Length: 292
Image (cartoon, rainbow, N blue to C red; front, side, top):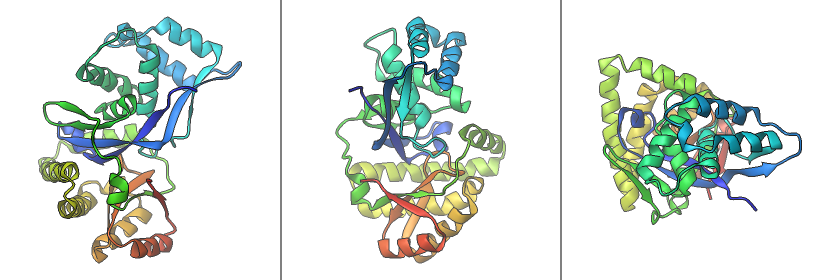
């Protein structure tokens, strides 16, 4: 039985993490990937990653690349039930699994591992915070602040049930690289940058309230992020999800936020009135997924 590398849920920090702001993510252990072997199978995506590692001077010395190549040609691959393009960190889990199996060094600090993961995951997204593979590699909650990284082994993983937190399935796959590129282009606007600074400050409040278990402040800050996201991240919210999103704010019965890059895939919902949320969900023919 091989080790499983879990997916992740980004509780706070969507996009603002790329500006150096804080973020908090937890493992989502019902979705993950593990190494498997099958005769005559060659995983093209892993072969592409191998070629990237070979040609990236900042990375190649950290891996046993000959072993990686030989095992890929021998039929080793990653079996996964993490949906791609859905915001659960499928590429992060790939990075964690590859690094864990083929790293050439031991005893690296979490900060050093984080830098490796940022460079690795850039292969998939063009730019990466590195938080997704950190969550998967350490199988633990991870907090990133403006100047440090924390592995939160004692963080309570029962948060989703306590907060009535669910995933909303948009039914649409998205391309993270394109979304991140579009976000970076908008940073040329001073007005947009100022809006993001306000969102980043509210994210910090949400992180603080989550770590302290302050339910009232969690709801308040989540609602504010939900409201501001409609303006700041409108391109990342599909129309069917946007209608659902706005009704939750109007009725103050549930609050939506991005789950990763947005644009499709899953969205994260903090529910105050489950019956109302389910009625609205049925109205827009969307699907809810419990995190427990």
